Image (tube, rainbow, N blue to C red; front, side, top):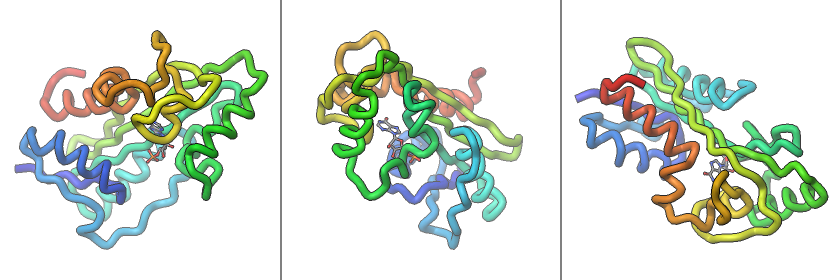
Length: 193
Ligand code: IMP
């Protein structure tokens, strides 16, 4: 059985990776098992930040490591919040953050936006990044209660609902995270990418 360390202190992420990877015969570990300081996420892209987190664990433990980074990039805001999505308007809840974004886009014609997810994996063969992008646009109002974060203001391309109005299965089929995860699983299954 192979060991994988998930480089996150978010228990929900650990649970999701455990559910996916244990089926493939991996033993899942998380940061609570080791003494580890979070590295500074000073990369310029989602992929760089995911790699920074995965490298830190790989260098520390020598164990196969997985880390991810994701966020929402809005064209009218020159790509913000982007890699700063989690820290954007820190101290406020997402109802407030989403309201502020709608306010900033009040008169904007260009409402284009995309969610990106980069999953970095380091194993004995080297560094790998699996990326998924969900294109779409920012809605005119907050809608839906599923999902989390910026889902209530994001309308995926080809849909009329926000991603918070989609069922978890519907979102997973098209989402940035769903796409990146499927690429990761294909790699771990030894399939061609
Ligand atoms: P991180 O990947 O844990 O660094 O966090 C990324 C941040 O991007 C989250 O805290 C959310 O604000 C945002 N985000 C990433 N993926 C999604 C999503 O699927 N829906 C809504 N917000 C998301």
